[in-house]
Length: 251
Image (cartoon, rainbow, N blue to C red; front, top):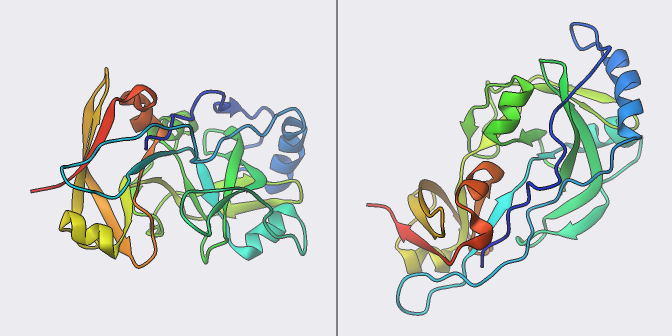
């Protein structure tokens, strides 16, 4: 199944007028709250309408290709700092992987060029370290040189300021462009002849057909078969109108 691109309707970076050099936290909160009140939280999650994709011969497991829109993961402590003491995330919509969800909560992201993304969706559950995942075009607009990293590998990455209705958090690191990857369980891995940490290719057949190489295999006991690419990649391949997708082992 192919999840439809979800970039349409996402507000792009906007200038943050009146913010002094240095991203003073109180100034950020004052200016940003005024903007937040005027913005609809319309950032979609990873879900989307789809169609059946085809894999190699035989009886392969069903493949889902999802476009992962910009989002963030937060620690319990940062949830309270951003949304209020005692607050926890409010599940809004389940994601394809069991136990994961798009939360009702969104944050504003402020970059070093004093530009911001007004609504960045929070995904749950919470994590041990906060992390923001953006597309390359987001990074260019914000003035952040995004490194490509597997999720969770954030040492030495750029930071940013996150602002919520109850306060702000300055991340010293954690802003990345997530490396394209495929989730699968051990049975799926055996079907494709791969192991956790291997690389695969995704073939998208469409009017803008493309082959995405070097998808990182993330295999465990419980995951469903699902490829994650970002909005830049999904739109470049015209995934919404793709005729088929094929996941193949890389040689």
